[in-house]
Length: 182
Image 1 (cartoon, rainbow, N blue to C red):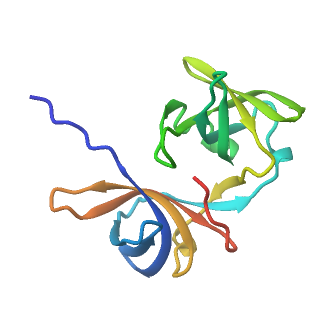
Image 2 (cartoon, rainbow, N blue to C red; image 1 turned 30 degrees about the horizontal axis):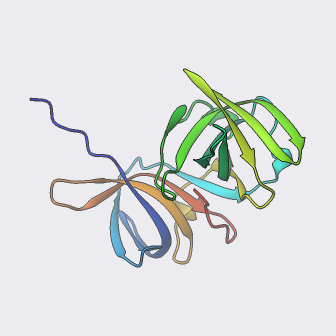
Image 3 (tube, rainbow, N blue to C red; image 1 turned 135 degrees about the vertical axis):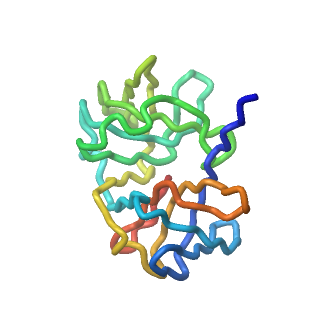
């Protein structure tokens, strides 16, 4: 019988302590979690970006909510560096808020006007994403463990181990006080 693969747990919050192989996070839900760091756990930085940083050909991710007309309304946008193009390519459910989705792909077109609309193309499809003026836009940049310090805001995904402990699969850490919006 095939074993079901557990969905990674999304953790959003503030680091309260760090040591060589773990960190403690006070989550946005009020929980205090201890999370193991594997020797190869990737860490990337999150910096502020502008809508002008998103151009045709940019590789982005956007948490969004579906609209009655079939478009998506962006909740946030993160711009990947070129070397991360292809990361998480596709469209799937997301846990940022009720009914939210995550779409990662290449920007095919950008239409400015009353708001902005991006066409995000991914393997097997595309989505039109409406981007309100107040949507946070960030860059994902290369990072390392030096970004992990008490007070830093993080978004990470963790695997629940057989003993119920958590191991980080990947961490996005805010640089210079940035709160990762994903």
